[in-house]
Amino acid sequence: MANSTAQQVAEQVAGQVANQTAVTVAQETATQTAKTASAQTAKQVANQVKEVATNQVASQMSTLNKGLEQLTDGLNSLNEGAKELDSGANELNKGADTLANGIETFNKEAIQQICDFINSDVKDMGEKVKQLTELSKQYQNFTMLNEGNNGDVKFVMIIDAIKKQENQDNSKEQAILSTQKDEEN
Figure (cartoon, one colour):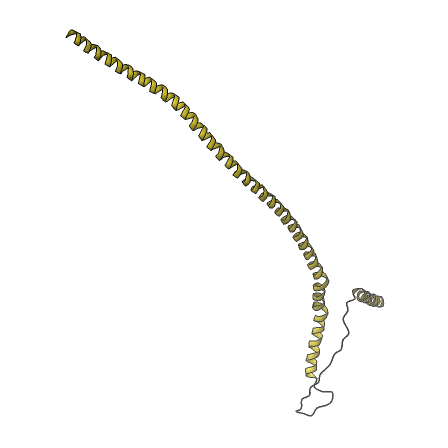
C-alpha cells in the first residue's frame, strides 16, 4: 500500500509538473510563435500597404500631372487672350481718337459754318423778308383800285448767293471809315 500510495503521489506530482511544464512550454512557444508570426505578418501587411499606397500615389501623380498640363494650357490661352484684348483695346482707343478728331473737324468745318451762316446772313435775310412781307400786305396794287375792291400783289425776290468775304468787306469798311474821317478833318 505504501508502495501504491507513493506511486500515486509520484504520478500526481509528475502529472502536475508535466502540466505546469506543458503550460509553460506552450506559453513560451505560443509567445515565440506569435512574435515571429506577428513580425512576418506586419512585414507582409506593410509591404502590401506600401505597394497599394505607391500605386495610388503614382496614379494620383499621373492625374495631377495631367491637371497641371491642362492648367498650363489654360494659362497660355488666357495669356494669348489678354494680348489680343490689349491689342483690341489699343485699336479701340486709336479709333476713338480718330472719331473725336473727325467730329471736331466736322464741327469746325461744317456745323459751325452752318450755324454762323444761319445766325448772321440768314437771320438778317429772314428779317428783311419778314419786313418786305408786311409791306407787301399793305401794298395792294400797282394802280388805283375802286373803293371796296381789294387787290393782291406778290413780289418775287431774286438774291445773289451770299458769300462771306471778311477780308474784302473789312478793308472796304476801313477804307470808307478812313475816307469819312479824312473828310471830317
